[in-house]
Length: 77
Length: 261
Image (cartoon, rainbow over all chains, first blue to last red; front, side, top):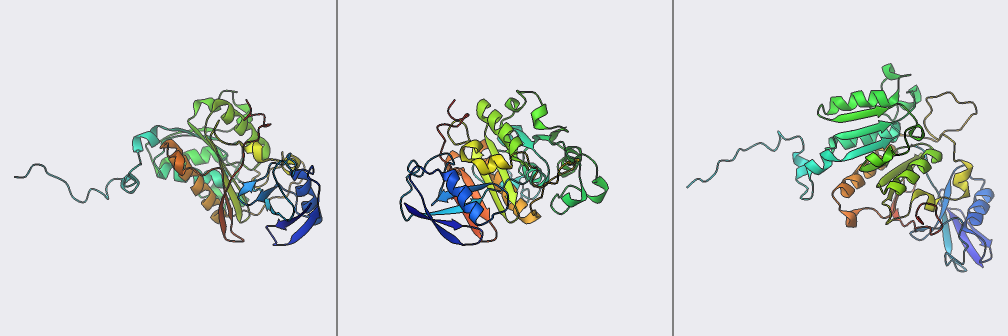
């Protein structure tokens, strides 16, 4: 399947060719590496839902042409 | 015939008059709630200020750090003369200036070094931490003891508040992934102790801190008053770069160590 991942911080978008058994974490790491994101925590959201890292794309019901968004998870205080 | 005598102009003599104008507000309930604030850096300063101004009177603080000069841009209770003093001790003193009639306890300690059942003695916990490891400790204990946990986090102009209401909602760990594990033990904003290895700090300012801490206390008030329909479910996300305020769902992870118990 081909999905789009958007970087919330920059607005940049990339397409990723993936399989249904690829995990959300793999998508996060792939996108973060590609954009050389600063070290930190990130989550992937689909619409208003934060996706669980260990789940596969099939398990979280992601389909071809869906757009996911990579957002920083702020852990400072 | 005149049946009763009323006094006029009393509304400005009551400190909590404007809060009492919320029809749901119960000052007795708020003042009797036993609140734990873990971390009294930037978020903790603002949270404590808002708790006291909102009528909370039983507040316990836990923080091990010393005050450093770089805290002063976003910690309303710390001054130049407080540098190198303990954050928890100074906050306790300053809160008593805001309201004399409050019971504030301060523990200069890591929360992990307090007794296993320490958290169980509280009605609600507000997390104002700067590292994932301690968040996970507090999260685990709150979920185990079924105590609501309102966790705040900031990073530059971005912030979040996650409301954990065991057993009905997800916990902090439900939303975490490998990127969290990689930075699990990093201290991301505050310091105040000797560091052996350089850990880069995030940008931090009072404005984002104020927004996030205000939402934390607002949600605490809702929970204390059992206004569960109004409580954020599950995550309030703020991005000042994009002018975004959103509520995001964090599904319960059925494989999570805490929610599956």
